[in-house]
Figure 1 (tube, helix red, strand yellow):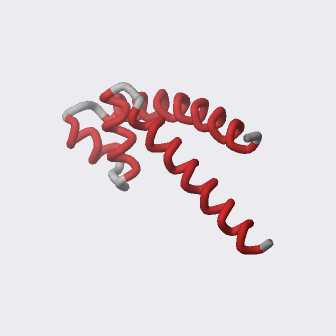
Figure 2: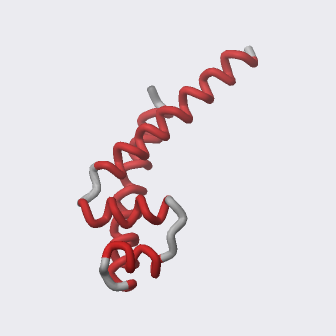
Amino acid sequence: SEGSAFFEKQIFKAEIALNIREAVKNLPRQQKKVILLNLMGLSNEEIAKTLDISVNTVKLQKKVAYVKLRKKLKDAVFSLLFL
């Protein structure tokens, strides 16, 4: 029914959000800080200033972190789809 489909969709969204939080939490400390600041809307320059690191370091940390997050989240979504 429409009600159960909505409920299942909400559960799926909640599981994805939980997996995202868990994946970010498990990143190395510097990458986690960079990603959290990025998710808050800060620019690379603002992140660099906040963490007292270079903009290039911010870019590299973001790149490496997003590769890790994509892999973990891809696996998580795949397992959720086939429960």
